[in-house]
Length: 195
Image (tube, rainbow, N blue to C red; front, side):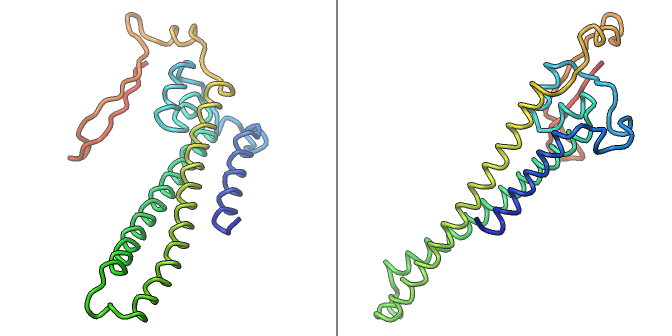
């Protein structure tokens, strides 16, 4: 296992250990990290499905939610970076391969062709490594998302329905809305929770 993969595995292990620890071990006062849940279980699961950590934060588990949120953002950034690196290297590799199969007048000698071939062999090894890193990043992002959903369904505590209906104003309903809109003159997603 390479250095990058070792760091990734260590980071994921640390995140999972922090998530499974009781809050009293991590924080001296739970009130700093915990608050009363404001969502029901179905709403919390939907929020967790929208993006990891949102359901946990809304249900009062701020530390767990923030940890999952940051881990997923980092994993997504790592995945996008790995994918772009791979795509860039593939285009360079294809360009070099095209030079080998369609040489210019200057490159039609054996020495030039052999040098291009050896470079292509090295580039192919680099491409395989970049593809493995990209696949690892995808597995990490999917794993964090799966841990988030499992936590939201089985381990998170939510408000009971009676507590939710008690807090809702008469005639009103607690709803979650997800819509598109313009935010600071750019298209975006608007998330609204009414109580």
